[in-house]
Length: 408
Ligand code: GLA
Image (tube, rainbow, N blue to C red):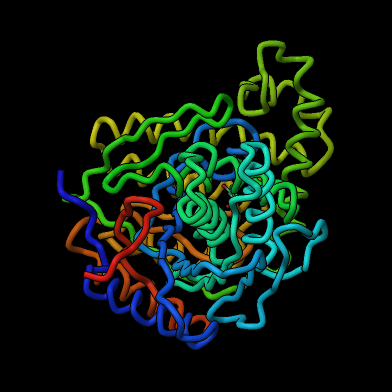
């Protein structure tokens, strides 16, 4: 099966890598080259806002992500900076902070703390050494492409390799999750770190969040491309609104579970049960429960369509998901709705929906192979007519997951 078209050829990757190393040396001094790691972002195609309700999801890693350059220090201090926030942070491995800073740096910091605690558990605390670390990359931040899981899984990978802890993929994914949920305080589901940590190009990850089982399902990239349209709308309220959705789903399950004794998570509660007891669910909670029940059915339908090679049915599921996220989950915005509408007007587009948490960020457009330009042009023009600015609509390829990069 052909690999997905990658917008990131090895040459441009090498250029980015070299530039990242130069920035590292400008930031921390020229002595000694850092080791550099890459960790992808992800795009979710099916199963919107189902992971923390225990439902199925189908994301895939993308060939944009985070570059992490790290160099050993002779003491036990860790310095963390990024290409867009060079002021960063400095901590001591023997006096780990226990409060958030309130900036992006909380994500890698949460992972550093978690990995050090694991290392202590392995009796390895004494062998750890200080590091200078620089983050950068080519993934839009806060755009629904999971820059946070890219950073967190990438940080766990970098520390695991550099400190030679032998944690392995599962422990790195868990560490990323604990950092984001515990230290940063976003009640996120398991989808993002799994999509990043278990990436396989040319495949979607079929992940059942209830029991965390997964398999890789091939997507025929000789027939489709994945386009991402970035609305440029920042998701400022996203963390609060996201956690609110998580709480509402928790509440929905508390109310519905006595009526569905077999259900261990909200995603297990059948539509008929939701409808029969909808009057017991306060306003927005009824809407959220309806979304979850219908989205579970749609995600299974999308899986069937994928296995049958029925691309137009997959696309129809995406449009239906967007409507449900817009009307029942209330996590879309005007700009995202326009992007999906514009895609639906273009014949080369098979399906489209907001991706990630929503409230701004990106839409994903499943596009017939060879028609990417026509779809992108139409969407860019329609957005410009309405909002007076040109946005980026690009084809993203797949990715192998976190790894160390070497200059070719
Ligand atoms: C964010 C969260 C994920 C998932 C999506 C919505 O990306 O981090 O866990 O809930 O939103 O599908």
